[in-house]
Amino acid sequence: MVVEGINRTDEDYEVATARVHAVMSDRLVRKIGNAAFRWCENLIKVTAPFVEEVGGRTFVATYNFRHVVLNPFEGVEPQAFDNCLSLKVLAVWG
Image (tube, rainbow, N blue to C red; front, side, top):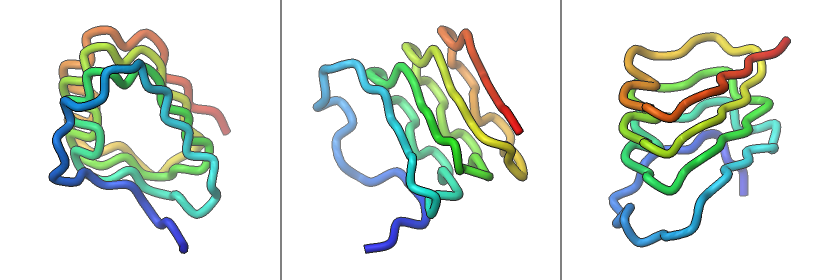
């Protein structure tokens, strides 16, 4: 199976109760799609060293989201980090 990106599904996002650190270490994951992590209240950190693109409203209202690490990327769509009130670190390296 080849994973080319991550997008939001219609599954109930309120089911998880643990704090989540999403790690996307596969070199084939190049894009995080629109609203992929929207309202994921348990998401606290994302490490995505090979992601080049972040879609619009990807992390909207992830209120406990504190830390994101990305590699050089082509761009971040508008409002990708809206209402991420706890976001402390946005690390982009190249």
